[in-house]
Length: 152
Image 1: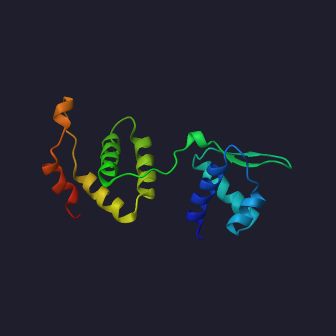
Image 2: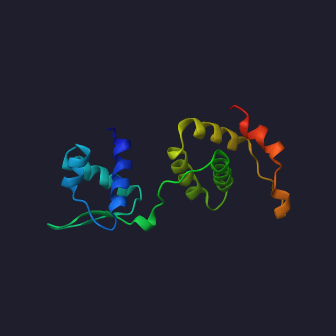
Image 3: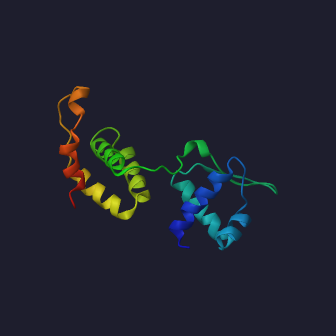
């Protein structure tokens, strides 16, 4: 298992048992790496902002605040596109930093081909600068489908 897969697996493991804890020794055995490797991985996750904390002592271990993270979600292609376009429009405003990190995370969990196509399509969509009424935002399927299905 490579490091990226292990980092995701560590978060999934801690989320699955939350609020209970897992010791570094238990995690090392589970992922067939050294205790030191697990500790480095957990430190990297903490530095990246994952809400993991350590409880010291004989019965301590590592835990994650499961309420502070989102579990896996299944998006349709159109939903994924909507999220990408929305995040893209926020990259030029006061939420640009958060939108950028959210966009990176979102693209990381999409299947590679879907992420490539959605990112290419989202790059071609430009929001209108004027305020629209809700009824103006509905796009007929006949117009939207060729745009979404266009190979990038």
